[in-house]
Figure 1 (tube, rainbow, N blue to C red):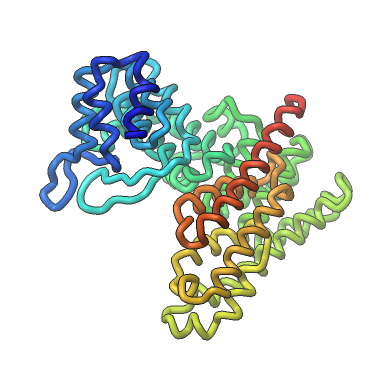
Figure 2 (cartoon, rainbow, N blue to C red; figure 1 turned 90 degrees about the vertical axis):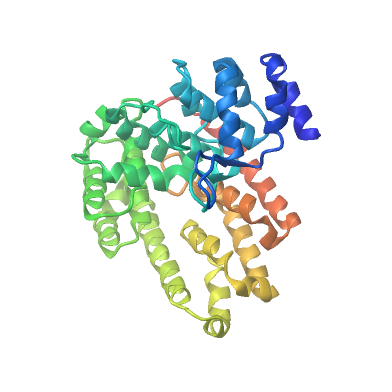
Length: 395
């Protein structure tokens, strides 16, 4: 009832004649396509979207984007992607940072939990994602720019893997600042470097970052972005590049080069702690490595988070309170250190958004009270970061 009333209040100014559709939408709990389940039949969400498209218009669909329920916002996105509104593309772009989760069955029997933002990206690139036949909203030549913009935005961390994969699959992609600036003219050089630093590390990306690091014509902020990205690379080659430039970086800002080298070494240390954990194949082996697992969870560097996220699925976290406590403490340590990676050039500045998404998905693992305490601390950090960025002069 509460959900239905919220829909009515948020949409009453637009679609009075769509009240029956809103009531039905309030009962749907997942996004589904035109051929789902064993029988390959249209899902309830898909069928309702056809009625919205028949009876509603762009203003009705735009109103859905303001709804508090992520399934309703998803309906707005799907309908806008199918409509002929000139604003559809711009409206979908505004939703990329929507981290709320929905269960999505685009086709077949297997669904997954995705963010509303990832659904917006999918619809931008493929409006027929749920089974409709519809031309793409973005021309092919606009895809590199969109992927770079997503990679440069910390709040779009949920989309980075998808955007990075799509970008690296494009033929003829040139990793140099001139070509990248042509693809994404709205991004500054340091943002382009930061975006490339979030791609899957390869020799090509490493060479680009190395050139950016030593280019005396680039701003200090650009070279900070390159150095930070090289710490994320995690390879011996990246670490050697930082060591080679350490003295020069220190000469520009005392201690900067040493800090980047130390961070790169810490990343390697974190990986070294977790490699034996990931190699475990049986429950018994994991029990034998319990102390090593607890020790691995204790590092507060951002690189440990992807390992902690994976640890949520370990059975030993459920069965051993001391392991679960170590996981909770590891998350608290990361949240307490968020300010250390909050600089806008920092490759690790995605961390608060990544922890938020994980906690919203897996709150049952660590308890509601622990989860809420962490989320509240992250919210305070992000508010502080936003005020700090607003106070800075444009560069």
